[in-house]
Length: 259
Length: 349
Image (tube, rainbow over all chains, first blue to last red; front, side, top):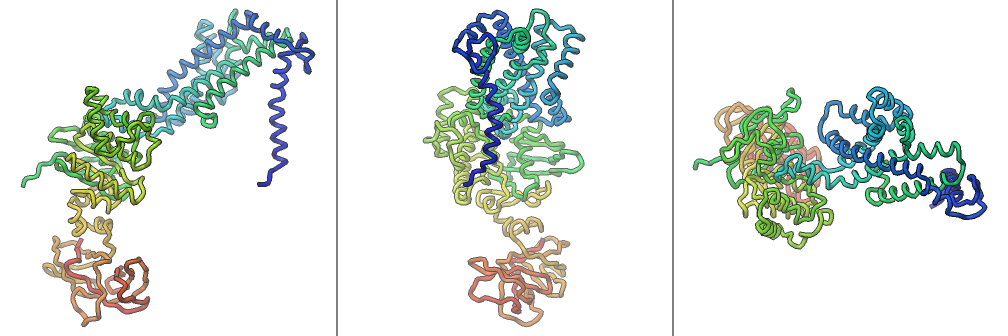
């Protein structure tokens, strides 16, 4: 087969544009310079230890993990039954409801953040942590409904019907038959929503308050005044975390099925 | 003998939008131990009928009884019917053994009882060796048997089969229908079988209900339906291809449009005026004197080779007729032929 040389060159350029900045960040995180510079002069792990000893980074890292985890968990608890009923029942205006649930993935993040700010902080004056959880729950929900919904739609409906004829109530059928067959979808949805929540800046920015800072926000604030490679080191740590999660998703469900 | 009906559908009406009826006042009664087939083209309502019986569809009107008990409003999971789906619908996350034991576990039977029953049914269906496999590791025929075993092990009051053989290849289909019949009569279980395949249905059923547009056109033994279709739809569906107008003159005597007289030994109530006969039952004969009864003459228009026979399309004064004739004598397109339509094979519908 003849190879298309031109196409390969373009692909290589695109890859280079995407990967070289990441590559540079990885390199600079090991540099001995006091500011981010490339190429680096010496090799050190100092910036990594600096990240781990920075209480502000660590606090916001833990907070981000907690908010992302709880928000995603809530989204799964609400989203899975919602996705099931959207897929199985002729809910009135089903397509409309579906698009509505997916709208936060289409509407710009800044708009979602601002809307939630208006609603959660101004209107209802939620405590900060609960407000953050609610906001992250809302941005996670569409991912859960979309990914789990497509898994449920691929499931043969007659296996539920047959379980009814064998004596299952609808609830038993959902627990014994549907859930075990959509675990990979739920897992993938969880990962995807988690990553999205963890990396989210606009919603966190609007909803956080005095003394409460999420990691991405914290990182941005830090760069404003300090331009040292600990930011690179932290980015590398986050990249590694994301790579691990993506690897797990790929192994359980395959990335193709959630895009 | 006064036959007791075990399953009864009384005036069942199903409509999704209340303007068009999927089933129109359908009545059907099935005896205990019988295997009844619902036969018809797609969209005739046969699967809907089965789903009403299963409880997956609630009828708009009518009553459904099993063993004198009204079940119309009883939900699916309390009906105790075994059902086999076209897609087999095996639980992908469970082994064959677990699939089969599923219904028994829900019934909270003792572990030893479950084990024994599962073992027995796996033996009957010839699946012992596959007990620990998962559904995706099995072939179509094996999955089919698992679906059957899973439905039978709960000792259902009724076995419902929704086109269970249509996903199998031709050879396996014949083997499986013999298998199903064997198991069904061995266990003496009342069964309803949905199919669109005439041969499959005739070979397996005690009685057949031929359905068309939500109505049962005829409910009879396979022999009776094959030999004596009561309506034109049934006749067409089971291979009668020649239809021509007849006017009744007197008992057993009819006249065609061109005046040819026809005798018919199978009497039907008068008023119906279509004569029908299978292409196999028409004979090409040596020409006889004009105006003989049950004889028409015509010209060969098309000849088709069918393998064991030739099929001729013959243009006659009473219409175009299809005739299958063995290849002892081959006629050419344009030949004039004389056709004999035997009185005992001619049916008035």
